[in-house]
Length: 169
Figure (cartoon, rainbow, N blue to C red):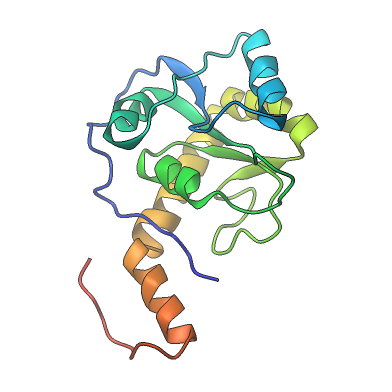
């Protein structure tokens, strides 16, 4: 499998010191996600409005944490949510994933089963030092160490479709 990384210059808005929202999910609140997002709102956590494309960046800059819950029962990484969180230096809490390579659970992101996501989000938001460390680690891992171009190169090389050479990022 390939790694969908980011780039250090991804955010289109300057990093915001003040955060208006506690969490963003950048997904459709449908099916199994609907109850999860409603439960978060009932705890008093402030949900960021949905936005996509360029409009999402200022909202993510004003949000403390990214949540990733799968639309269907699938223990896989949602790469665009992970990269968006990394680019905006946000910690990420996800539903359990089987293979988060190159990420390390507990160091780059946190995970919990669907029924434990609300508690995991609240706990992550309370621990300010760990919160900032998760955000910095995720950014470093996906926007510096595993950039998009590196993921493409590794995938092509694994398939024998590219020669090994350095590419400017």
